[in-house]
Length: 325
Ligand code: ADP
Ligand code: MG
Image (cartoon, rainbow, N blue to C red):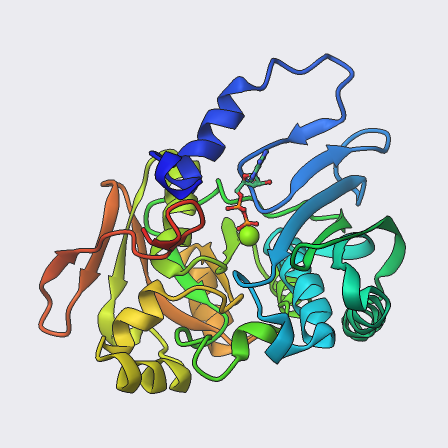
């Protein structure tokens, strides 16, 4: 497969998006491909909690986890967490999940039970019902796909597309090095943080950081009509794990914070006066860090401590190329 891949993951998704025909007048689809969740209008009218959010993510042994060393509970937890993170990115309330698994035949039942225990932990904590799925066994490695359904709040889902020039860019936690100590297996989906922020403020745009800041922030910029961003190098919160990763591989901790994936923190943009209020009084349980601002001119720039501006390449993870983009 690898050598046949001429285009990146996001080019392929763009292509699929362009193939979609115009929607029927009675279509449920309010937002299709291109955000963290699709938004379906299933109730009468719009808003008022009638928006159904849908998101799905697949995890594969050898790519997103290692079953033999991580164990099935950790895999179940991670599979649920990464899906809930996409609901958080829309400031939604998770409601139900369906789970499809391809189990390695030799230990199918033990693995299935372990997966369930891991999923249940998070499902209990976030009040998510497990309402269905599909179970298969084969001679291949474990693959698990979870689809989570959620509800937009009365304030409506937060899209990637609402950023405006002058907005302040915030993240909900320190970034980088999630692989170093296995943190990528135990992400905390920022559901409660997103709901608290959405209640407290008008969030213009939001995304969860799954592929890395330098890859995911451009989705906000592109979906918001081709804007740009200036990141302040000295204010990017760097996770201690990014320093550990840097010690191991010689890259800088800053590069890890910008480019590593699987932090599953939220990145959001708000008007400057709102940002000042949120930073002074972060709504519980959210933590907030100001990392830069949205600008009119397209592109991603980094402002170094001496005030110089340098362009930043997209460096997060591309699933088709199998390496940092
Ligand atoms: P996320 O990292 O938030 O899960 P992705 O980068 O995986 O989002 O996907 C970006 C957008 O493309 C999402 O709206 C997703 O639903 C959509 N998407 C991804 N793969 C496909 C596919 N094979 N067919 C249709 N839509 C897809
Ligand atoms: Mg996402």
